[in-house]
Image 1 (cartoon, rainbow, N blue to C red):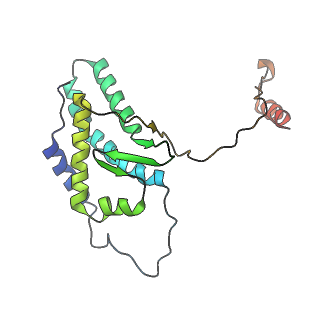
Image 2 (cartoon, rainbow, N blue to C red):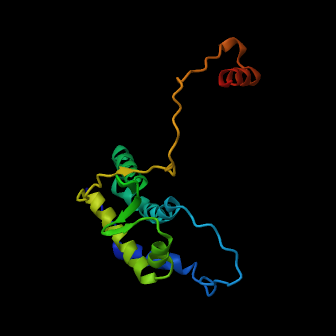
Image 3 (cartoon, one colour):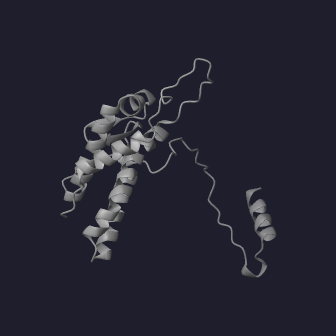
Length: 190
């Protein structure tokens, strides 16, 4: 595919975007404030993945312009891009989740997130440039695919599996109302 993201233009638009949220109180940390619970690792990695979604929202019109006469090809490329971004958060065989942006691995550590995103504008812009380079590699087909499994949502807890047989609930069509459904469900779970 011939599509390329204009890195210089998009980085400048990103700089303008983050300047909107820059104010003198952005680093305000009162000593008497209530300590908040630490977000989950998945939540931190999802915040990083949102940078990919921002890039996608900014380039979607350019991508559509590239495929102006081929709706099926546009839908295919857009779907592959969304799928790639959705599967960015991966899990290692050891059980640790991570997100790779080119050569930088994020493990969901809040201190690493603050260091690269919140407290250092230069690292944020550099990381954003790496995201654009990675997506350009995706469009050109030169991207190295990660072999670890993707994590689609935050279900990283060990679930207990019942050894009982799974029984299906069948309800006849002639007596189909909420009361009958609830009575069958209650009867089956007893």
